[in-house]
Image 1 (spheres, rainbow, N blue to C red):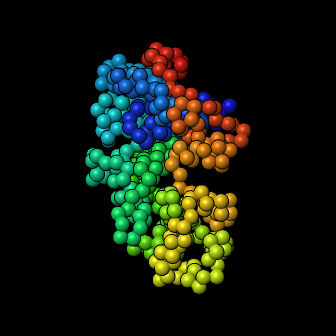
Image 2: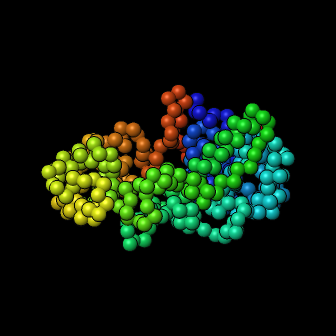
Image 3: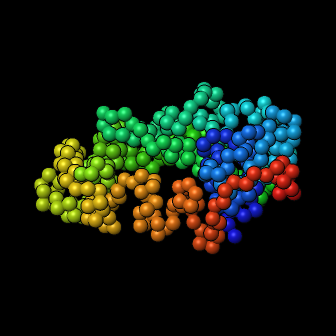
Length: 356
């Protein structure tokens, strides 16, 4: 039995982080019904964020679509919507209406800027939200434009995961008290909250606000390097014992330049020299030397390459049966997640019967 078996989630399908949150909950066994705009409901194969869900076409601007939504709301544990603030209210499906139909509902609202504030009605995307929150600041080298992995920091980590946590927390509270809540999951909030670990390092003097001058964004032992074949590797030898092992494996342990790990003034010269060393061998050669050691190493792999790596294959992290996609996470020892299935197209009558 999956960990969320019996939990009913109604998703008003939007873009990106909302559907991802629904997929995450479906992966863990939640029963997710997704309402989509008429005409878009036939795209289920290969749409990874729809996997495990039951998809129903519904025009929420019509009385029929609104009635269907409210009928499902009355039986749902949680709702996911990612509209601009005020849109659901204009559709007659705002929190007041829905929670009148179901006082225990966890009403999850996922936006970039949040439900209130000067930017609440402005358009934006992942890169904008994490820029404003401070989360993008360290994502780059000195004197270079910062750039983070697309969608991961803001949409998924700062948005989808915080919404999922808010929904599950509210569902737990509702089951104990009989009272639901409204979750304002703003990507700008979540991505700022994730900065607290970095801000802890900042408070300790380990991270400066001058990009490229701190332990995690300026040191030679915490960076990506280009190999002889044009591919890249990463090093993260933060602790002294791991750094010492790195130098030993690179045959740099007797080089005077590298003896002081935390000499910030030497980092540029150390990085230049280390880059030249890394450039002498291919990625595969460095994997033979460093992988599996405590030097804190990993190659930079494309998703298709990652799927073929022995560690990834051993854990069955990726599947290539249809399209390349990652398996459900996290894992539970006694409540394993079922193998994800493609989305199922169902009618409104079937949806109502499913939750009868």
